[in-house]
Image (tube, rainbow over all chains, first blue to last red; front, side, top):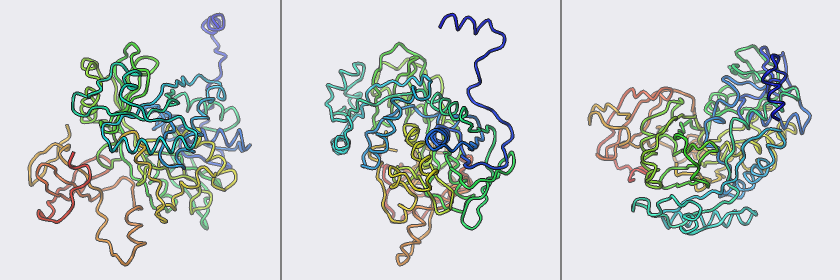
Length: 413
Length: 93
């Protein structure tokens, strides 16, 4: 290792290949065009190439790889959801995540920490018991624990929360983990790229041509691309893409903000979430606290950050961890979240032939990256919804068959 | 701290308000399909949008016209002060 590093440093011609290809001009046609080079879009490209042998794929990205919500979330992976459909889906994602570093040959810094969702009221405890039972039924490690267990795992917590809303218990999910989010996108991009997938950064989709109810081409800022299959794997721009194919949107765009503190010595091993206090927090390998809260109060198509967010988040954090009073926030940012009425995604085939949707990922999308790639690749390759995403179709709003996942959202948005 | 310049109650912090969503008009009970579509589907691209906002301290309802691309409030109008409308969930926090 040391010799290799030394040779690399002294070598003027760096032999290490680029992580992914950076072609400038798209070809005239592709079998599949994926819009959005975030984790979801790149994972879909990877599984299409790896599992289904479809390699003539263009991935379009108006910014840069992983620069959207893939790089803006708080990196938490868990499967303790509320509906059977959600639990099975996220469980598959956790399984894929656990071996993903090996599969992509890249250190993703996947770190299993244990995940506590705190309850400050009887009502929250009731939902947690329900969640724990659904989870156990599907073989997921999830249980209700008392305040003592929370204190044992996290000795610095103030169980009384300043006397305002004492912690009465928690839902504990041992497999809860954090993972380096950029690396997930880079790993998928590299592998897909090696198999011939072409990723066009700084290339926006400006229109989608539909003839006789089927997709025929995508208009981009770098010219027209003929294709029979288009996957929308964006966040924040889903309503815009839906409008291009003439579909109405069940999704509203609301900003979700997050921030990090200055680095500290490791003191927080588990991931701590409090729905009532609207905070979730974990400590990264380099010591920063990554903190998130509820979505912004109203629809907005912008990634601006706000002072209101950091002040209210800090206020709630200090209820949990008063000793952090002198710690500084060093960075904050926002992403545009696709919020759906029932807090579940909108995925699969649509009423437009060849137009597939991987959307509605609101504030819960990063943890689903691998399973979204796997199931969307299947759906695109076979033109049939994968069984794990069958319940997530857009027609559920017509049939009023909602998948109420609000009770399993990290915080009460 | 974001503030709204309200022609009725003056300059107030945005945190005193609760957004209760866009205006979808009065629904006709006999057309359930249209009501459902109006509830769940719509144009959600960046646009100028008319919304209901509730001011918690004064318990007044307002109609906002807001540009969802940049969060600029274009107009604020007082809804009927004695309108018999429910307080939105979460407004009591």
